Image 1 (cartoon, rainbow, N blue to C red):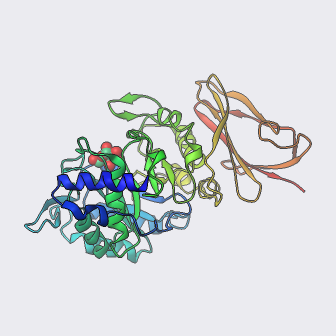
Image 2: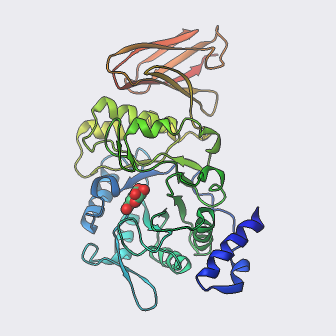
Length: 399
Ligand code: GLA
């Protein structure tokens, strides 16, 4: 497998004129750095700003993350997505778009780091990024060294304009480049699940996108983009591939962007936590209402996402619009979501049998949104679940 990979990568590099040494230089000698024991949690510019991003906006997000309670709730990464790049100089060095980032990248990264946060950037394995800016093809090692010099902690690496390239080979090159850059940098693989990354991406990166882009709607399809529940449906069979340092990525959060109701955003946030998904906020953190902040900083829900066992939830039951999702947590607790996709409230319940618990076991049930704690629950737990809503609970066996 390793040899085949080296050959594939070598063959590709040959096309770019790197010649016979490619086989030797493209063995992934260095181990993947242990950087994401839990899924990444932070903010990314794309969902709200797309290409309309600049350094003022980024500084405001860093300030807000540090001051609003998000950092205290565990948020760490500030990631600039596409459109920070402009061109390459005569030596091939990537040039920042100085109209948008007049202070340069290093100053902005220092600003983010000074707030006790980590910093991420975006690039692409093709000649161009999806937004038409210079990609990293043929410049992987040079770019990785530049990122390291600037102090980048996280790279989201996209898949536009890659033609017939082999995805595993292409991501191997950037994985190697980052590992040789002299800095620990998370590799976030973004090839939209097209080439079954769950089968090959774990040795290379720390997370991989499993679908096309999310857009800010409960449900729907818009070109390559999908509504929240359409993305959810594509995660059902992926639980077996996920774990510490190897997370499935169902794309970023839309909480607070205005296209869903508060109930729907609670469901979105809860379900992403159940999936051990990256919790990457995509709204304007410097201008959010109390409901948005309340959702994004729900520490009990975040604790499920970040649980050290790293076990992604399974959908253990579905009938029509009603679903039950469950995941085991470290220490013997379980997180359960009763999910109602329907347009009317529904009575739902989960039995201990469905959760592989003895029927006679007394369980403490904590509602992670209302914070209600009920003790001595036996055999099953039930509740009324709002339309398009969830009840999310943590079950703790009593002794
Ligand atoms: C792709 C990715 C998105 C975003 C844009 C940027 O569509 O999937 O998440 O990074 O490119 O152009």
